[in-house]
Image 1: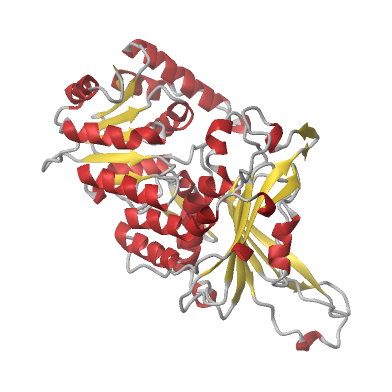
Image 2 (image 1 turned 135 degrees about the vertical axis):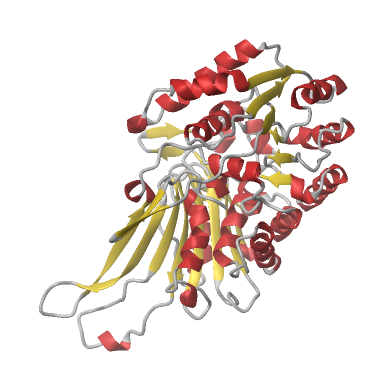
Length: 509
C-alpha cells in the first residue's frame, strides 16, 4: 500500500522526502460502463490526477465500453468536459485543466460500443487490448458483474501470460445478503483466480482510513492502550444529510443496513479492531481483518435499532419524510437509519462494545471513529472543586474533514484545582498540502501495481455479510421501525441503545 499523492511527510523539526512512487506498468484500463456517472465523476478525474502526478506509463490507455453510439472523438469531448467540471468545482481550490496532461491523455482514449452480453463486444475489446496488461473495471449495475466476467472468460480476455496481467475491479454492492455474496464469489472464481479480483470499497481510498493502520502500528504509545483494559467502548458513525434523492428504486430494495454496514462500516470496524499483521502484505492484512469479523457475536434484536426519517428541517430547508419521497411506497418499512451494538469475542476486545450507526437526513454529514477510553480514578480529586473528569476520547475523522482529535483533561489556570476538557486536533488539509482528489486514486493505482491490501477478499466480504445476516433474517417489521425527524440526531431508540449501558452517543451536528 503506497501513498501516491503525498510527496513529502513533514514532522516537527524535520522533513523527510520520500522517493517518488514507481510508475504503473503499461496497459489498458477498460471501463465497462464507460459512459456512466461513476466514470464521469470519479474514475476519469482519478486517472487525470494520476497523470498529473506522473504515475502513468506512456503505454497506458483508456478503453471505455458502453452501449451508447459514440465515436472516439465524441467520447474524448465528453471526457474533457468531465475533467473541466472536476477541476472547476473544487471551491477555493478550483484550477484550470492542465493542457499538457490533457494533450497526453487525448490520444490514449478509445471507445468500444456494444452490449455487455454480446460476443462481438468482447471481440472488439480483444482487438484493442491484444497482448497488453489489462484492468477491467466493472462500473455497471450489480446484475452485470457475473455476466461480464463470464463473457471475459469465454473470450479469453482474463487469461494471464508470463508478461501480461489481467485484473478485474468489482464495484459494490457485492451481493444483497450472505447467500448472494457467496454465489457471486463462486461465479467470479469459476473464471478468475482470487488474486485477479479487486473488490473495491471507495471508503478505503480515504487517507484517514489508511492512516488507522499507521496510527496504531507506527506509534508506540497507541498500541499498549488499544485493548479492553484501557478502552471502554468504540463508536463508529457514518451520517449523511442527504435523503434518498433519485435512488428510490434502488434504496427501497436495499435500505441503510445493506447499503452501508456489511461493506463500509465493517471495514472501519475491522481496521480499528484487527491485530497487527506480520507485514503490510495484502493477504497478511486481510487475514487479520477477517479474523475480527469472524469473532463478532451473533446479533440479537435488542442490539439493533432500525429507523426511518420523517419530515423535518435540514439546515434552514424543510424536507419531506422518506415515505413522501418520489418513487417510495407510502407505507414503506425500509430503514434509512440503523444503529447496532457489536461484541468481538477475542482476547483484545472481550467486553468492549462497538456501537455503529449510519443513516440519511441526519444533523450533519460525518464519518468518524470515536475511541472512548476508560475513566481515570476519581479519588485523587475528591477534595477539589472537580465534580467530574472529562472522558478521554480519540476521534478519527474520515469525512468530510480528515484528521484526528484527542480529548483529555487539563488544569484550568487559577489558584484552585479545576479541570477542563481540552482538545488537540490534527487536520490533513492543514498539515499536508494536497491537491483535490476523488478517493479513487490510491485504489486504482494500487490495482495497477498489483497491491490488493485495500481491496476485499472473498472471505472478508462473506464475513461482513455473516455478521449482519441475522437482522436480514428477522425481516422488516413495522413494530421495530423507529421514526426520527429529518435533520435530527436520529431516533430516540438509538439513544436508548447506549443509555441502557450508561453511555451516550457523541453529537453528530
